[in-house]
Length: 183
Image (cartoon, rainbow, N blue to C red):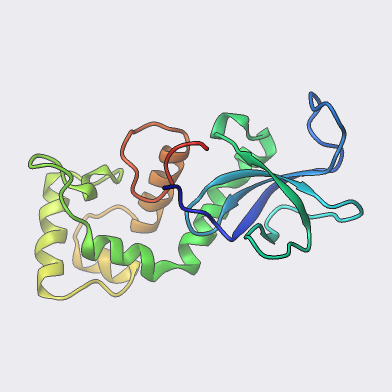
């Protein structure tokens, strides 16, 4: 089951569509604000959106979107959209910090040899055990709390953002944050 986003954050707007499209229609490329689905949507005539706009793509009446053209993979993003990905994911992670801090509080082992926390760049066995022991005493409250309590830990928010980008680029079969599989 693929998790659907109700809103996307626009990464790029192409007023006349992509150069190789059969018909010229306004198109936006965006990223879901919950499950990080990459979508391409047709924008209604006479409407303009810009990068960072939050656009409704759910099942109810859509104000700006004519229809969803489909899910796309990272390689299909325009260069401008690729340039916006990190900044927008960083903003999404900041706005929903509790959700991502809870990942540190609740993450479980994937196998007997691998913990899901180890999929984050910068976390090896030592940091893993430090995090597991610290969260046993009391849960982490914020990224700042995490960094304060775990010595020498790289910036947690940056690790999450990097992991999400790696998942979008399909660098690992494991999915922690990005909805898996193309439709």
